Length: 232
Image (cartoon, rainbow, N blue to C red; front, side):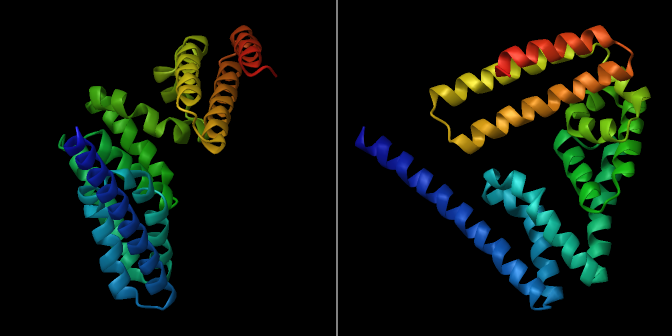
């Protein structure tokens, strides 16, 4: 028993130390960018994107957000960094179109396009996957959904959200599961509010889609049921 507890403790400690090391790695890279050590900073952002998950899988969200933001900041100051970022994106897109990619790679490409302010390329890629690799496109829909809705590409939206009311029922189930989990595990207030706000945003999104479909009845039903869940 003691051996098992010690093993768990060491594993958690190692994970914490690795995460701390990776955070420090990012901070040091940011400092290099500010100090105009651009070549070295580029080597570091490229390494982080390519290898951080081998050391710390928990950094997946940071890898596709803060780290890409640093890469773009560097690219705005140092052209080789911008070229490298676009080449990484283009390589991922090519693999996907050749049938050698997966959902994780699609997420990488979409995140790179978002950081580069080239979201239309993600939509174009998704359209191609929808036509040529529909099974993969189905898996990737929730990664690109918000981008496509933002750009109001309703010819694609209607293929993946045919019934807003049915879609909301799935959203409701996910939120209720998350809410129960938060309550049972005494999750911090920030996370609880984040989950609630995400549910509200996704619900409003579906109401607006229903209205675009001229399905006013579904829009009213979704709004009424959401208010009951939120007591508001």
